[in-house]
Amino acid sequence: MGKLTAAKVKSITRPGLHGDGGTLYLRIAPGGTKSWIQRLTIDGRRRDIGLGGFPLVSLAEARDKAFENRRHARGGGDPLAEKRKARVPTFREAALTVFEANKPRWRNEHHMKSWLQTLERHAMPHIGDISVGRIGREDVLRVLTPIWGTRIETARRVRQRIRTVLAWAQAHGYIAGDNAAGEGIDGALPTMPAVKEHFRALPYNEVPDALRIVEESGASLTARLCFRLVVLTAARSGEARDAVWDEIDLDARLWTVPPSRMKAHVEHRVPLSSAAMAVLEQARTLDDGSGIVFPSPMRRGKALSNMSLTKVLRDNKLADRTTVHGFRSSFRDWCADTGKPRELAEAALAHTVGGVEGAYFRSDLLAKRRRLMSQWADFVTASDTKKVVPLHG
Image: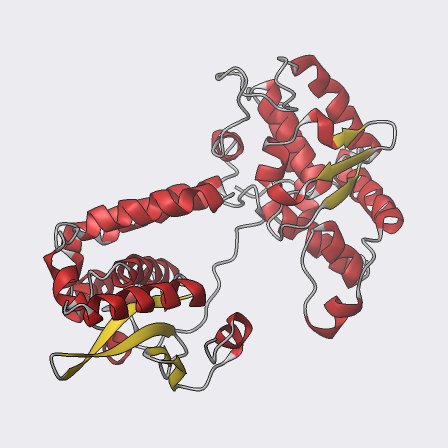
């Protein structure tokens, strides 16, 4: 039995080598990244073999690889030499393999598409046709330097995705040394502030007019109703677009989104206001037999695409001031300015509460949220247009 455990591998942070017994070590870099190293003596020389990064390669997988290498070495073979003989894929080929391997676990359609598109746009022109075993730090810097100071979040994502692809290559023995996108290039890249790109959002007192503009637009009934439900429930776009009738209890006025469709992978109960119920009553006329609440008018049996609601905003000249997700921010600001309790607003948005507060917080405050969402619906559907502040051009 090795000295390490899965829990210890996950929790340990001290830089250096941490032995599992025998020839396997967990290496923790000063920056905190973890990778597996095997030290073997081959032909009288100590050889370090990279087995991949953690958590991409688990403790059990690292042990299996180490055992296989030891067995091969005892028979007079050279594990490193054998790996080098294998055909080394190009970065493009490796990226496609990693993409296909991860695609089943990605629930966010936009993230899935952007993962590969970001690499195609920024990395492939520079390193796409280079074998992963030949990619060095200078190659990665050639990708990152032009965007590092101007597109901070994009550059970070590109670096992380390159690192993920190269970690996969390490795990399969195509790269013997360090990850070229790892800590070794930190000194060549200026430290960037941890800036979070916020979604564009309307001031909440302009939301009623935005809702009216969309309602009176030429958008399809499906898109208009879906957009209206998103605003009324403060739901994420994907939660509403992929909703099915089996999730909705009209008698209880309750929409239950399963964990598989939630960002935090936790079931979320959404109380339905009278205005939200009216949306769903209209949506009944859209039934195409698929069970989807808002079926695509263009693709029978399919839900609205992820761009359908964005197109509604663009067509109505709202996209330069808000995103669909931005209406959640508008709702949150309304909660704050009207004195709604923080925990109530966070529960309505299905945000995970961290720290000690989250450890003891168990209720989803459904009854109180039902009153909250009715008040929000009354505000955004107010018939007194004099209270609505016109949208600024």
